[in-house]
Length: 192
Length: 192
DNA sequence: TCTTCCATGTAACGCGTTACATGATTTT
DNA sequence: AAAATCATGTAACGCGTTACATGGAAGA
Image 1 (cartoon, each protein chain N blue to C red):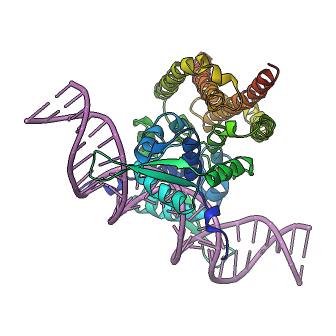
Image 2: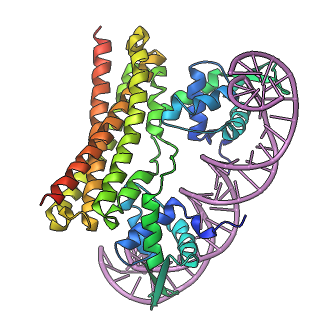
């Protein structure tokens, strides 16, 4: 009951700190980024980001400067405080809490035995196409990252970008190969 | 406003229908299974399962028979109704809604450039160990599944079990290889 | 005797999504 | 003239987790 309230920062909070460690951003910027770069492994809409920024602010992990905005409100440009950077580093080194797994795609495939084999093949190849589309966008982005010499320096943000992007490419490649393997399994079973 | 309320079944609801398609279960059974077999791709506690079963019941997708339980309440054994089976099949064939991605592990690694390379190596090898442990349990379970001749019949539940398990093995193998690759990247960067 | 397992439910709270609300500047 | 972009917020609701609550039977 007497615990430090500032300890209770969600993964979203740390995802935001991670983004701000890479540069100053407005809440609007963060919301956009949460759909693309970081969005590849964590998503959030602006309705979640603004309240979270207020919490980070009252915990003194971020600060902002106000600018003349073109809308009805002032634009707030956020950055990490020294405390924020320290909290983020401490979180990285702490034991990760096991995360719940939610893979709707596999939940579906897990019940495909109820359908006839042709319907299954359709399901699987649609699944394959979705993975392949994401893979293509990752490969596309990778081209720019590997060209940057900073991506070879372990203490530069582009190094971490390159390594995590490679992870995305490898996992999607594995998924595409898995789909192909499943289609071959149906062929093998049908040919018996 | 005049839509069919029974249309609104969550992924959890369909995960339960998928489990019941494979055999009769009590709520307690489902909660246990949601930690292991299906739990590999969808998790839920009993506090979520009991209310969801009530919803599925009022939508007439499941039914139950009561048995003398050894606790203070009667034991309810649930099964799919014909409607439930039809809804499940229809869901499998419907367009999947894009799911939000939440990968805390990658969010962490994405900020590892803030740490010194040795701390990063520690983070990555701990990550590798966790993936390897899950992989080992999958491989272990696979042994039993592939031995079952039913796992070769596309319209038997064991066929779907085998294919999804293979997916888990492939994705965890890819993750372990990715971690090894990252460690090698640190070595390469350090040796410059 | 103590702990675990079977078996069911409810309550409180936090995270996440969708929708509501506003309004100026820039592009089509 | 219309649409998209920048930019910020709030409200309502649903999903998910933790904790509360009960109690018999079986095993250690």
